[in-house]
Image (cartoon, rainbow, N blue to C red):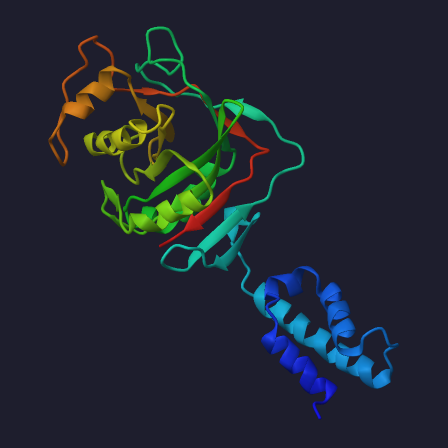
Length: 304
């Protein structure tokens, strides 16, 4: 005859209840087990010992899963890193930034430039506002730090959801990539596409570093950004230039229709020059429809 300890083990092995369910509601699970094995009888000392053993097993599983959490150092101390597996082809790292209790929304300064700005007279058409986390650029620089030391570029993809006419950037994806001192190419793009699809995110833009160059958009950057802006007019590019003493970052987009028309017609590759738009305006411009929002939660997926 099967003992109650054997019943316990067989119930665990044959159960469809997941470890996540155990983690979220251990005590409810123990109650389910008690009813399953003992019915409505009062548990005696022997039965209590079995239940306690079960609880120990569940707590051990919970501890093993929790041990996957690793605290990032230095500037990312408010971010917890989890090893997770999604529908993408490989395991990834996911960081979830904690949201401060008291926050505010601020317009990002365009910086010193002769370029026109989004939503200004004579510039491109009016766009929806975009909110990004106040820590987005700082956290990205931290993730890019090792590459920056080696004079290698780093790039990331920005995912957002749309609510009441405003795009909220809630996800930063660092794809697998091949980098040089003046270029960065994402590889295995199906991995970050899977994340965007799973979370129903709009590809609202991208971010990359210029480790030893000034803050500007190269011809390669312009062609890269064209693929984003042709899908979503609000798409923008963030350039991080830590060695540029005059402007350490910039938020840019192609002028529309001027810059968009020229990039659409251009068939050249590599670094090359572009003609000026017929209206005399710039190829690209600063964005003034992008705001930092300290209440916005940010999730980071590092696929490298």
